[in-house]
Image 1 (tube, chains in turn green, yellow):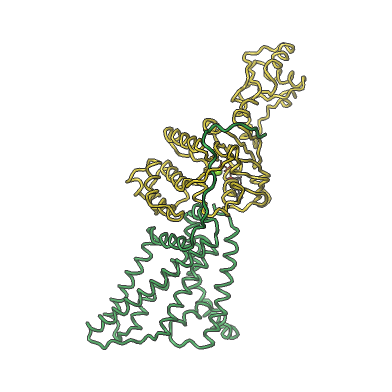
Image 2 (image 1 turned 180 degrees about the vertical axis):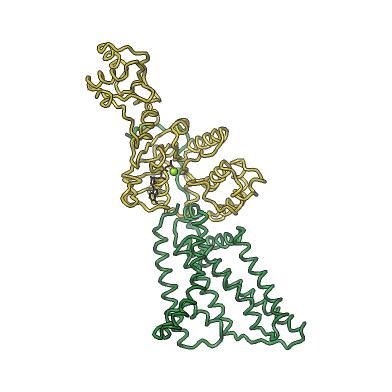
Length: 266
Length: 316
Ligand SMILES: Nc1ncnc2c1ncn2[C@@H]1O[C@H](COP(=O)(O)OP(=O)(O)OP(=O)(O)O)[C@@H](O)[C@H]1O
Ligand SMILES: [Mg+2]
């Protein structure tokens, strides 16, 4: 079937020229850019900033017991919803918007892309929480000055770190659902089932079933990670967090990464 | 800068070997083998659903094959260190984030590949997207503008190999002409171009080599000249069924087209003699030239509702 014909062109055949692997730093940089350069990503993050400022102002005027803890809680609540959404969209937009066709062709290693997305997501998360703490501190100083109260600093360094961890886990939860479900709407719905419906169901089950009351701590990841917001995590709290995290976070993440690596991108 | 192969003559830059893809028992791509050579434009031709896009997705690692291999210059696509510099890919121009502008999309590609920002402006210029168009969000792009943007993204790394799935989709006549010249130039400069289409005429004017796929299988491949030469004879007569019968009696298979013309692989002289003996008057007798490929392609397209008038059918 193949007939040898002289090439019609005069120029010599061009051969491949790439020699250097794309550096991981660059992929992370690109993923960060992708989180900000779309309207949804942009407003999610800007919206987060606006909401935290509003929360600060409301706290300053409405809360009779001004303290740093009150500010941090007011800002932390919206953030704990926004951050998982950022984690979800970082992954799912490749499928929902079909940009994966380009992304995974330019970097044909899905593991590298997903790892870079995780790094970018966590960087955004860390930065957002740090900003939230700063806005809260500013609010605390200004708020107490305006209202004439004494400035109360009631969050320990240890508690600040567990708050970071709690928000990080929430973000990871969103990320995991994105990897597992690979559809923006599906993953967002799944997140709210996890964050709102499941805790209620667990609560009801515990109320009526005595046996479950003892088991709940080990299987209720939302409850276990919410405890991180309060100070004074005990040894059993950490054990609960580890076991529930394995069940609700690590195992599904492993399954998601495995199916993602063998799935078809189209 | 660019390394040039010393012994580049007839170099197979894309080689597909025994490639198959099964979707739950359905063979979308069935034991496909072909090559695309440097310095030539290879047309990948097939009707809708033939398996062109699936084959191309497998080539770039987006779809895992059930069996077989697809190599770019002897290597799997995923082993290319920075594929954007080596292979320009356009699979679906609509597969872009609707909320990004054209310029942002090219900037992301340039950044990933590690190219200077100036490449973005060069590419926008190359595909004739104006400054204001480049600032528009892709969801507001026309089909042709999306296609141009996709081509710009494929060309941005100045790759030696181009893999384009229906690149002429949505382009106006001037755009199709422009695209044709661009691909010709790419191949003339030693590049390898593989482009798919379901339109024979579109691909005939630009391709040097043709690979024809139908129902997941390769049904013909070779240089365009060879495929067009092996065209057979085209006959018109009032008694098409009678001629088909006479040819069949002489051991020559033929087919009757939907317009009542007869086509066969035998040469015109032989057909003329048989018609004379059978006392059938011919109104037209000629070498079928390009029409042969077209017929083959039409037959492929009509495969599911296969034309009932074959030579045997007419004889019965
Ligand atoms: N995920 C899938 N599951 C089942 N069938 C599939 C899947 N993907 C593709 N197919 C089938 O494989 C066949 C080949 O599809 P493909 O998209 O490769 O065709 P094509 O040659 O590109 O057609 P077109 O000219 O219309 O673009 C089609 O019948 C299609 O329905
Ligand atoms: Mg297709």
